[in-house]
Image 1 (cartoon, rainbow, N blue to C red):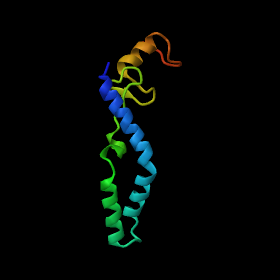
Image 2: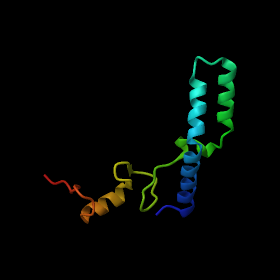
Image 3: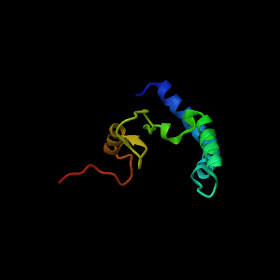
Length: 101
């Protein structure tokens, strides 16, 4: 089980990313638009730098939904490998079976 503070910090980051996503997308589009002059593009980049660091989607860490484990995360299931194996062995994940040959 991950520290509760780490899980909560990640949840706060997700909320910030969601709140600033439209503004960040607009500023990114302005910064990448070659039809604008360099001054306007520079201003857009400076405004992007003023946004909170945790508003950047790359700062969000994928974590297991049950344990909060940050490593060995399977996106398809939203679980870490340990919990995925445990639930699969109990038959709680439809269509997933232990392989044997």
